[in-house]
Structure formats: C-alpha cells, structure tokens
Image 1: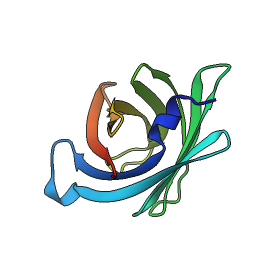
Image 2: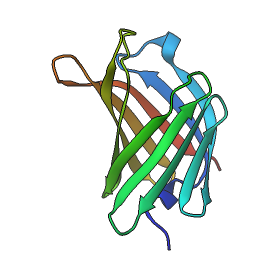
Image 3: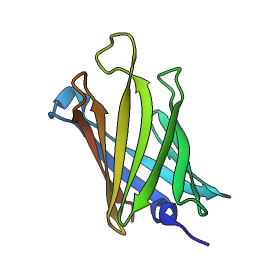
Image 4: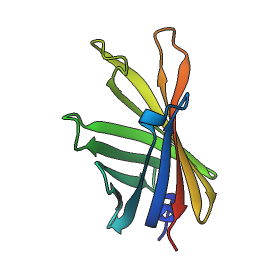
Amino acid sequence: MSDWLDRLVGEWTYEADSIPSDPERQSTGAETVTRRGAWIVIESDDHARFQLALDKETGRVTGDFISWEYAGLWVYDGAPDGDRMTLASRGPRMDGTPGETDYEDTWEIVSNDERTTTGRFRDDDGEWRDFNVTRYRRKR
C-alpha cells in the first residue's frame, strides 16, 4: 500500500539556496529516493541521507537525517497534510553558539515532477526564521 512518501520515490535534481540568498551557500546536485520496506531512503550525491517512515495507524512520519560533514544525528517527527509535510527536529544552533534550537522542514509536492523543501529555525525571540529553500525536479 502506498503512502505520502511514495510520491518522493525516483531520481531528482535539486537547486538549494539560503534565505536570504547568498551565492556562496547555493548548491546543486542529484538525489535518489528508494523504498526499502516501510522506509523511504533519500541519498544525495554530495553529503546527506534521510530515512523516513509513515506510521499508517498514527499518520505520523518519523525518521532521521545524517550529513557526512557532521557528527550529529537529526531525529524527525511530523505528519503529511495534503501536498505538504512538516517535519520537526532539534539541533545545534546555526550561529555556532552553545546550545540547541528547534527546526522545521516543510516539504511540498508541487506536481508529480517538482517539489520543494523549506527549512526554518526558532530564533532567540521564539520567532520562526526561514533559512533555506531547495527546489527539486524529477529526472526524465
């Protein structure tokens, strides 16, 4: 039986940019999304791997993310809602100071061949701040 995550399966190219846009933080690449049992595995050609699974009883998505550049493991929890899915996590502060903060990644299915992910974090004032957006296009 398929679930929301099956819409991600395939070969994709991506363009990532910071918010606000900074040419030094822009990147492009490719990723492969496969189903392995209950899990969707997303592997990029540069440095990262996501693993996500939808619990059909609760409707919640759980998973984790690792980057080959960092020693930490990011644990995610969230739920799909229509063409969007928001995954919450907690991780090191982006400004390099000690401590952690909350993060959210919002995944949106734009069409069968296009999707986006927008990342944001909670600042010291409790406000959410977008920090990156990635646009994906399915390979032909």
